[in-house]
Amino acid sequence: MADNALNRDSFHKITETNKPDTTSKAVLVSRFSKEVTDFSSQYGSETSISYTVSNLAGRSNIFPAYGDFTQAAVFRTYGPWWKNVTSSPRKFKRTPPNFISEDYVELSFDLDVYPCKIEVWETYNPGSVVRILACDTASGTDVDDGRVRWQVLWEGKPEQCPDKSRIFSPTLREPLFKTSLIRLELCSTLCHYYTELDCVCMYGTLNPCSDMQSILKQAPSFEVKDCSDADEIVSQTMKYINTLSVSSHQESLDENKDPGHLSRETTDVKQEEVTPTEVTSDEKFEEDPEMGNGYFDDLPDEVIQLILSYLDVPALCVASRTCMLMKKHCYDSLQYTELNLQPHWTQINNHTLDCLKSRCHHLQQLNLSWCGGNRGIMQSMTFGKFMEECGSELSCLYLANCKFVDSEVLRLLSEYCPKLADLDLQSCMGLDGIGLIHLTKLKGLKRLNLYRTHVDIHSLIAIIRTSPHLECLNLGSCSRINNFDEVAIELSKHCKKLKSLDLWRSRTITDVGLRALAYNCPDLEELDLGWCPELRSGSCCYLDLVDKCHKIKKLYLTANRTVCDDDLNAIASNCPDLEQLDILGTRQVSEESVLRVLQSCPRMIMFDVSFCFSIEHEVVNEWSRIFPNCSIKKSFQQ
Image 1 (cartoon, rainbow, N blue to C red):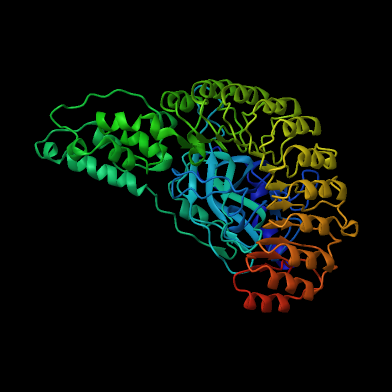
Image 2 (tube, rainbow, N blue to C red):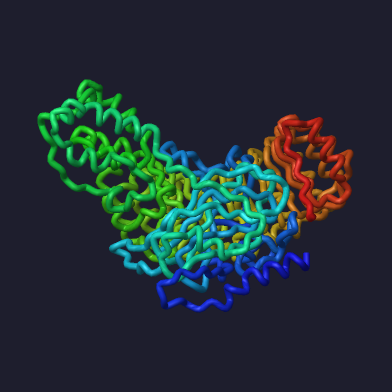
C-alpha cells in the first residue's frame, strides 16, 4: 500500500511543478479534480461525507484497495431492480438507443487544458461509466446565444467487470477546445451492487497538439483498462428514412439534378454534431417540383406518421429537411405528444423551446431532466411561455436536476398545466417551501418526486392535503423537514391510495408515523425506510406494518440496527408478494429467519444482507445456489 502511494506521488510530481507554457510546444500536465460542481444523486446524506459524491474531489483515498468504503463517491441506485417497481419513471418511446445514462457528476479542475486522457479510479463494482464530456468553459454564458458547448469525448456501454479496483481510461476523441470542467455519466444497471468511485485525474496540454499519442508517452501508466472509441450510433430508422429519400430521388440524380438540401442534411448525421439551431431550425427551402417524393406519395398519411414515430427528435428534424412532404409530417403536432429531450440536454436552450412551441400543442408527456445546465442557458420565462402554449394537455413532466426551475416555474405550471399528474422535481435545488406551495393548485397529482429538494413541512402538508389521488411520493434526503411523523399522519388521512413512499434518510420518523401509514394506507407496495434511526423494532412498528399491508413488494430497512428475527418471521408470514428486501447493517437476525423469508417469498429478486455479521459469505453463496432467481447481496471491504 505504501509503495503504491509512493508511486502515485512520484507520478503526479510533474503535475504540481508545471506552469502554463507560453510556447507552442505541447507539454503534458495532469490534475486531480478540484471540486464537484453538480451531480444527480448520492447514497450519502447532505450533511455527511460518507458515501457522498464530494469524495471525488482531490487525490485518491482508497485505490488500490477494493470494497465498500465510506470515503468513496456512491450514487443512489444500482442494478435493474429500481426500474421494475411502481415508482419507476415512465419510459419514453423516442429515447435514442445510445442514451443509457442514469446518473452524472460534473467535476472542475484548476487548470484549462486540451484533455488527452482521463482516468476514473473505480474501487468497487466498476464498469458503470458510459459517457465522458468536456465543457468549453471559455465559451461564455450568453443566454440568448446558448454558446455553452459540450463535447462528447467518449461514450460506450456499461460493463460487467472482475471484482477488483481499476483505473478506467478510455481512448478519447480529439478535443475541440480547452476545458476545466468534465462530466461523467453512469449507468449502473449491470452492477451487482453500488458502484464506488475514488477520484478522477485529467491529463492534457496547454496548447493544441496533433500527436496526442506521443504526448501521452510522457505519462507513467498504472494497470489501465483501455476501451476502444465507441462507434457513432445513428438511429436505424433514420438510416431507413435516408435510404428511402435517396432512392426516391435516384432518377433525378441519374439525370445530374442536384437535390441540394437532401445531400447536405442526410449524409453522415452524427448525434453530437447536431446543434440546437439545426435541431429546431424552421428554415425554408425550395423544392424541385420535378423530383417528387418517390414512393412516399403512394403511402397513406397514417403509414408515414407511423414510420416517423420511430425517430428521436434530432432525427425527426433532419428528416423534415428532405422534402416538403416530410416537413409537413415531421411538423405535425401528433408527432410531439410525447417529447423526451433529456438525451439531448447539451443542445437544449431557450431557442430550442421557442422553435418547438408551434409543434407541441397536443403535448402530453415531456422530459426535460438535466436540461438547462448550471450555466444559465435556459430561463424560467422561456419555459413559462412554452407551457402557456403547450401545457394544457400535459399530464407528465420530468424536470430532474433542472437549474432553471424556481418558484416562478411552479407558479406557471400550476396556471397552465391543469392536467398534470406526474411531476419529477428531484434535485431541483432552486426550489424552496414558498415556491412549492404553488403545487397545491394541481388537484390531480398522482406521482410527485421531491428527492433532494428544500421542501419544508408546511408546504409539504399543504400539498398532501390537496392531493387525494397521490399514489407515489419520494421524500428521500429532504433534510429541511423537521417532523416526518406529522407528514406520515397527514398522508394517512388524505392519501389513502398511496402505493409508494420513499422516506430515505428521514431522520425524524418514529413508530407513531409508521403505524399511521400501516393502518390507513393498505395499498402500499413500496416503502423505503433506509437510514431512519428513530424507528425501533421494539415498538412492534414493523410487525404492525406487514400485518396491515399485505401488498408490499419492496421494503427497505437499510441500516436499522434493531431489525430482528421477529420482524423477518412476520415478513415471511404476511408478504407473499415481496420482491425486494434490504436489511443491511442489522446484527440481530439469524440465518434461520433469513432462510424462512427466502422460502416464503417466491417472487423475491433482491435481498440485501450486507454487514449482517451473523450471516457468513459461505451461507450466502449456498443460498444463491438454492434460490437462483434472487440476487442476494453481501457487501464487503477488502
